[in-house]
Image (cartoon, rainbow, N blue to C red; front, side, top):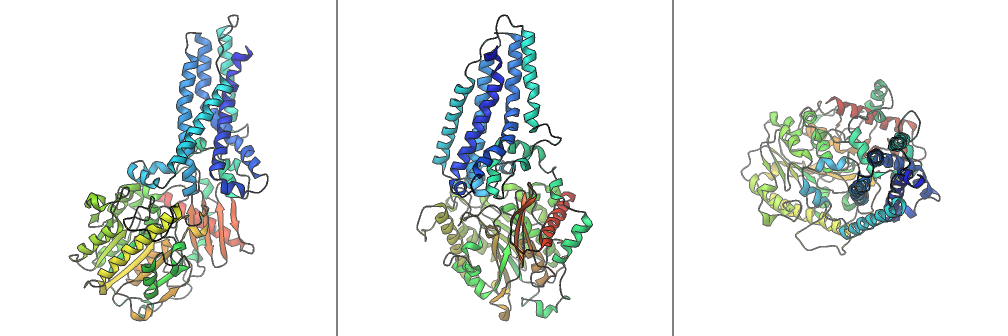
Length: 619
């Protein structure tokens, strides 16, 4: 009897041991971060993480526990051992795949695997391209090792299931099995407390990596699927009236509206606008804003002869988020992206819509597939008259993953502009500096590391930009054209910044082109700003209304309290002249904060997140 009825707790113990092995693999894969943890933190990762591990184990044990109960009731004809082994093999493979995928996704994105990748399932080719720089051999070996550990643990801990003793009634045996099954409710909820276990219960350290390492991946995926867009309470910190008072100074101009003539950077009110979005152009690789020199010589040259904004932060960390922030002036959300919901994006303002009544013709150029991450629905709603995407380019003009090389994209733009009616508003989105960093020219920088590949891909896109500019300056439309060059988001490379690190979010913004007045060339705007502010800044220069862009301000006009807000998965950063703080929404506490930082800065960041998220919900 003891051997027979120890099966259920042995099965429970098997999954707990498997999750300990998976957690150990995560710490080993990220050994550089693991060895930097304070003393005693490693023990806390396993200890505090045990609650989520036990909860995930309880969920995975329900089916075998029920099968065990049925087997006890039916008798030896019931193939309980076969069914349990088959179930465990399938779920074990799934858990192992999630665990190994999380290893590399965490390195790239800075948060544990959740439901976020599901928004890319309709673009499998782009998903594969994103993983193109992943060490597939290492990950494959990790998967094999984890599966081997699972087989070993199953054999040693569970083993065979002894038959029911002949003198023990089936009804009594089934009742005992049912009682064990009922007891799963306790670990499933994470204990007997009133509120079921959640991520915040395993957040124990001041170091975000330690908290992230304690999270159970299968539990996190399942929980995020269950709570997507519904767990809004963690983004509410105060009454809306108080939040409004705190956010208002961020958008209240400090002085009356300046005279148009003195405020304008342009020689004409209706220039052509070429809005170039540069994939992953982190400031760390742009010399004109303090980054490495020699990687972006053409962008740096534009910065010297144009207007440079050198303290700009991306609102988020993904392309589709940057697109909405730049073209609609709308903030990002900490747990989702508004672009996933066409019914919401239909209610956003858009530069294309704002410029159309002023007589602008519009076009959108992208070398990849516009359907990726639901971008096409957002752009079609915006009203672009013409789209150019991957299917419009020959196979020989494309790289192996994403689509047309950037220089091919720019060449198409140059050909089309020769017959494009003016004034025109054209958005160009590059892609070659996205993983796997596949470029068609010789590498300038030595090395085969991911950082070296990324640096070379940024150099290539800048090279393609230089070719485009050289030809464009010889065209008749260029003298009446404003160029807006800005990144869609930053990058964790070089330096492998943590998910919340402000260096990961700082990006360049340059206004250039023949439409600029000679006397403003070489101007540097040092004030803090955000991606979301580009829309209002551009519309102010075109003397068009921007009142629909609630979360955007003119970067050329001082506000009472300049600031930039950015967010990542369940956290935000808030930048002011006083300094930078980052905040974790799960533990509901700052993850970094300079001493002497005003206490109101935390409140303002919380207020901004609360109001912008409520605006997202209301769309």
